Length: 185
Image (cartoon, rainbow, N blue to C red; front, side, top):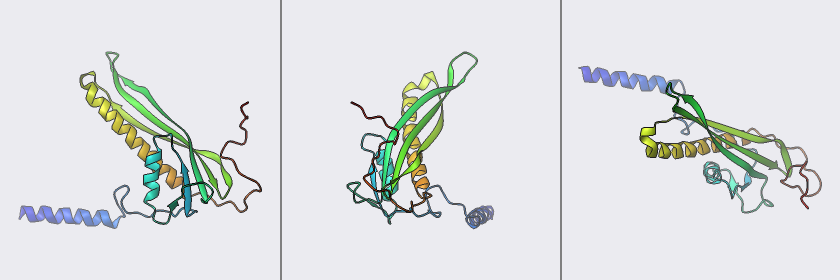
């Protein structure tokens, strides 16, 4: 009797959760369509490149091109940065917690028109620290950095979905370099 009551209660909870629209992150839910169907990703020398490719490959209506000439949109990862800062210190003056911050700057050229300003994505993670488990904490830190990169890639793709397509492309070739860049001799 008690076991059947527990099963009935669990089934009722599942029905309530599904009725309110609950779903696990990354599973289900509506995804806004991207305003372009072909994209060239310029992220060869950055660690977020593979995560961005993975997230973009999930979209069945998007084709990643081999070069920028045949793409409607060009996404370039300009830079990425990882920083590890002390978040809390215990009464003995030892580090108790770190804050890991991952930032990436992305430039988008849509239909030959650079979209200004560049996208800045920042992801933060907290990590408890103990001198007794240094090796384990190093592995945990690596996992947190990988999770932060995946989260940043998801944020970039969500932001790409809300870009407005420019009405007219400018005349002449477009560069991916900033307009205020000073040429080096």
